[in-house]
Image (cartoon, rainbow, N blue to C red; front, side):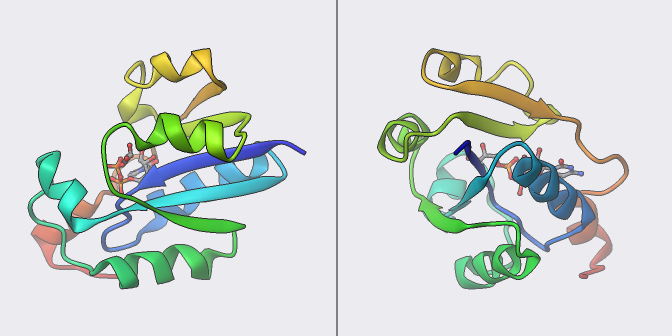
Length: 130
Ligand code: C2G
């Protein structure tokens, strides 16, 4: 069984998030999705997240792509999760290309093409929530 993991904030859940999770699921048989805490997002400079953690988890759950949802609380957790859950593939959007290459020592790293013309930042700016 191929186990895949991905992470994100998933604020104001949109098509870009949906397509990322859909393709992540297609990479393997079992998908784990890590959803960030507000504290972790603040520590990495994401200060304007609108949806609560519970709402963001629920939106990921509703896609039906995640076999398991975990909470990401800190930098460094990815490495520990990959060992703990015996992950085969770590994946994330291409806006992060190159930044997680260090995880190649522990599993395969796949950057999926980011969906164009949609982002949480754009929706926050336009106040257009879907
Ligand atoms: N994404 C995408 N297309 C978009 C917007 C986002 O493919 N138009 C992808 C991102 O590349 C990421 C996932 O959707 O893989 C979640 O995006 P965010 O909620 O912005 O989360 P992010 O800050 O990228 O978290 O530990 C956190 C992760 O490293 C990434």
